Length: 335
Image 1: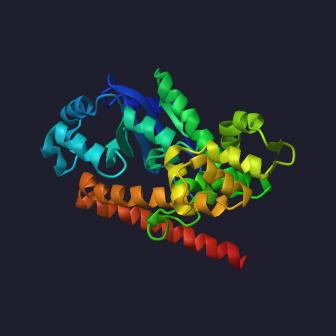
Image 2: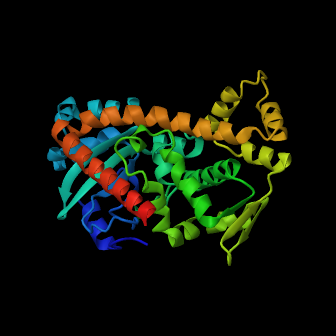
């Protein structure tokens, strides 16, 4: 359930930014959706804007909102776009921006980069955010982008099924899906609340059910008991092979590489892995490898896009959340 489902607020905030090139805008995170243990009504609101022409968009935004940018603004819109596209995960964040009496952070990504990440999991940076419920503020009229968003959810479901046993609860499945983009993220060791995935899912079970309802109802080889909120899946070699065939291309490549099987035919490698039921750990490690690479480079880029002072303030906020999360975990264990 959204914390403050105030679409008027989101719409007013969106009105501060150039609209013409924007194909999609969504809000996410603890400022939008309830998270267990986080009751602050003034949490920073996170946004992502997908734009067709980043150079044109940044030029207009720098004219309208120059104070949002760090010293990198002196590179100009073309330089900013080079930093956006070539470093990290292809997204440029401005953080700790005061807008409509709220603190916001917004990331700008080219529509083509977003589509590719959703379909192929190039970095899983924005694809992972869209595994979880988000608040769409501006819907896309781009059919290919809409289909990519759906494909990303299917990718998450098939990947998670390969990582899970035959019988699981809804909550366990949703935690696996929500946790994909955090596996391999060094910030989960230092900088993020260790209970983050649990808090996200536990506070938004209804939203997750709605988000994945059609897929759970139509996916072959699984049975969803809605009353008991349990899921059973067939983990026979044929079903494992079928799921692996549905994986995004970058994860497929990682699984094949990690398997060490010297064979030019990917399908033959999957047949061997499915027959030996050896795919679970390889899929887990493959996801970790993709996430690890992108989060490190994106975090380094964030120091420059935010500037040193904002980076310090933002990091302190994250560390405070991590400390509170650890304290709550200790209290729950002791009780």
